[in-house]
Length: 442
Ligand SMILES: C[S@@+](CC[C@H](N)C(=O)[O-])C[C@H]1O[C@@H](n2cnc3c(N)ncnc32)[C@H](O)[C@@H]1O
Image 1 (cartoon, rainbow, N blue to C red):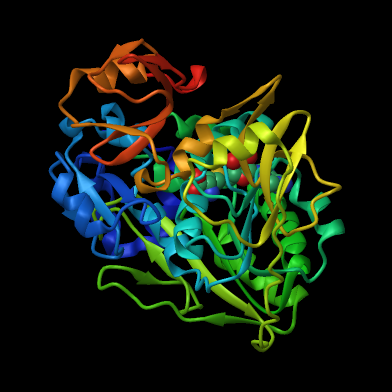
Image 2 (spheres, rainbow, N blue to C red):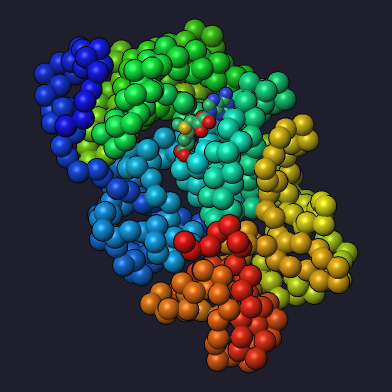
């Protein structure tokens, strides 16, 4: 049984009252594991047809499933194909309740390692643009990897303090998600090591950070824009009190109610908010609120612009690519080709602008790993598709040279069950491995 500090126990007893015994009891439940399907790459129905895992629907999501601990989905080629994200089931709620519409400009303010950003990208479905930001440079690297694996083009990955972003983008975003840094009380069951940090820092340490973050976010939200504030902690100071603080500094802000799944609880004094407790659902804890700044406005039409790059090697490569790009421009920066969405990011620290397509080397073009993840099998005219049981899949993911019986020559997109994993270069049945070094199977 987890050793909870005395003062934490007292707070939780006051909060939960007669449910406190059930809360303590929940520490002996097994941890619930979840995966969320990348609906940009595969429909839920199609994934269920090819999934080798023991899946059960997570009732508050449309594309989230519990899996069995022994399934080990992080050790499967489908994970490398970016077909799903592994996420704690209750953490699926914040992105789910943010009402994203086609063409929205969205900010995920505290995004790393990317659980919520990946779902926002699914909801944007290739339209609009996401700025996925995290102050921590090292966490932002993990964010970049997850975003690239997800395969989208309409995203910038930034690493800034959100207060700095706010000076560049007043009244800019249609939607903002703040999954705030918090004391993590909802994670004590899954990761008891967080209790030590709770003892050292308590709740107030986070309250001041959260206030700064929400103040900056509110100033970046457009009139009529909507915002989700969420934490994975139970303390009222870090949840409803932060909502009260937001209401006090932004008078036109209002709370919108969220459809309540049976076992969710309402917020303290704010019935529009939802509280998720581990003794009520199969998942850890979370708090989520949906807010709107003033009245909804009608939307301006997106500017559609597209250019082409006059480079023989790029054009030759693109003669094998059957896909159209929109709402952005192709740009070569330091010999790398990108497709960059229409959004001015000139003054912020970026880890990635849009889609990194490949490298313009002397007399040739080399497509990137990110571009392979972006393509669908039918969008490249030279593919080798393996079944998930084929031992060459793992060998490819390990970076080995592999043999196939094929007359193809040149760049090939290597797929598993029809879903791209990366590129290779084939000649006389030998595939030279081009799977990115840092992504390899360990
Ligand atoms: C709860 S985690 C986010 C988890 C993420 N939303 C997900 O679903 O994978 C909070 C994040 O906030 C980031 N953070 C803390 N202070 C920040 C600030 N001032 N500006 C931007 N990000 C910040 C932390 O580095 C941390 O990664």
